[in-house]
Picture 1 (cartoon, rainbow, N blue to C red):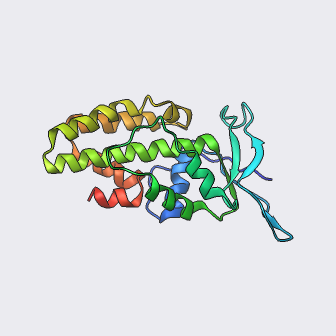
Picture 2 (picture 1 turned 120 degrees about the horizontal axis):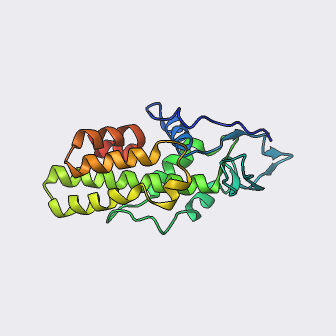
Length: 205
């Protein structure tokens, strides 16, 4: 198995389809992605679990397990990894994000760490709160807008955001929160269009 290290500064814009978008988010969250040898041989389809873990000093001290994105149960594993400690807006579901993520990377011969997937969930939740703030702002719903701002202020301090910040992510979350506090729909909308799933991008237009 070969591991290809990736530069965490290369993923600020994601406009080339689902696969490119989630590859960019993976880079943004400090994921180590790697090409793998084929995981099917003699009719055997490999599971997502590799039994291999990150080594301190080699993967930014992330010792969580590497998962095969082309594993036969990758979708189920991604669903199970959903962090219950991450708040989401009322009525929001991760289901659409999971579908887009799996369709973008599932089936490709690569690996991604457990912590990275959980960090991506945190990014989806942050996106949902940005979109909720924007919708509330356009609707003139001040209580809903204020509730979203209160959460956006906390995003940069979420443990999963800190664990997967490959450089500048928490700073960007703080920038967006400050923009929401002052009512700047342009900054928040631009961030959603650059960094968030397609259904939330559509909501921000």
